[in-house]
Amino acid sequence: MRQILFAGAIGLFLTLVGTPLLIKLLARKGYGQFIRDDGPRTHGSKKGTPTMGGIAFILATIIAYLLAKVITGEDIRYSGVLVLFLMTGMGLVGFLDDYIKIVKQRSLGLRAKAKMAGQLIVGIAFAVLALQFPNSNGYTPASTRLSFVEDFGWSIGPVLFCVWALFMILAMSNGVNLTDGLDGLATGASVMVFGAYTFIGLWQFQESCANALTLTNPSACFEVRDPLDLAVVASALMGACFGFLWWNTSPAKIFMGDTGSLALGGALAGLAICSRTEFLMAILGGLFVMITMSVVIQVGSFKMTGKRVFRMAPLQHHFELKGWSEVLVVVRFWIIQGMCVIVGLGLFYAGWAAKK
Picture (cartoon, rainbow, N blue to C red):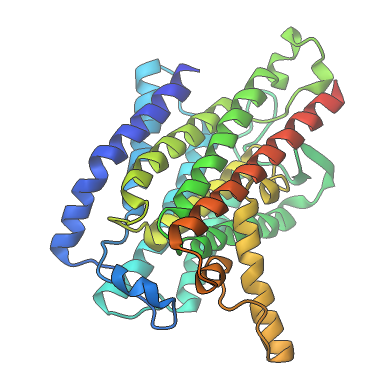
């Protein structure tokens, strides 16, 4: 429990103090946001705002995790390291994308094939490694079975698992990327989901099958390799994003860029896979799913009928064009995300209670 508290507090402190230093550095180098011509007109004033702010909470999360381990004397676990690896790897792909946008003044950044290749390399490496490193109980960081609040059904095998893991990683990283269109929207929504995973990791640790001898009902235990370590990572991410939100909320002094959005999406997917809550992520991260589906619907409708369902996609821009202020859209979408987290945690608890 102490390492969870230390990780969150250190992550919060580092981004509160470190983000303004990063803002000054990026501003001095002229690394400002490139605004798309086809976006809402009100976004024109954001041109030149320092971007690549994801660097701040990526570094803060890694440092917070390591310092929490050093302070408490606890061992570093494979599951936590793998989630941090996925977050950092996806963040690196996003960094290259942001860097090209800024240096070459090309709004699309990396070519689509190059960006996809980078995501695939990182995702496959994570998926393969997540099936290694069994502990004394034979549990690996990930499982080849599908999961909701725990594993269910038969094993899909390592090959199909890699395909499934890649789908989750790409879906979540691009989902957060699409959500990152308004000041503080993606950051605030991510804070809520990381808070949920801090709770889930702690609950799974207390009810772990490794503690089966001390549980009142051993059949209701969780077969997760390192649940407490996942809670430490989630807490570090929650604290780091909270501190970043201080500077990222409207009017934003810095944007996370693809560096941050791809990293956050990768971290969310990694936490879901390693905590055996893969399908539950679709509910916990409901806002990201909703915004992603708005793009799918918009593109599908236009290709099939030549008509648009929304005034603009992703969904947040549709409401901007309807006359909602940016802050109003963000706050209301945060409320939706909060409800998704409440429902998701309720289903998680109900799934555990049903086994007792």
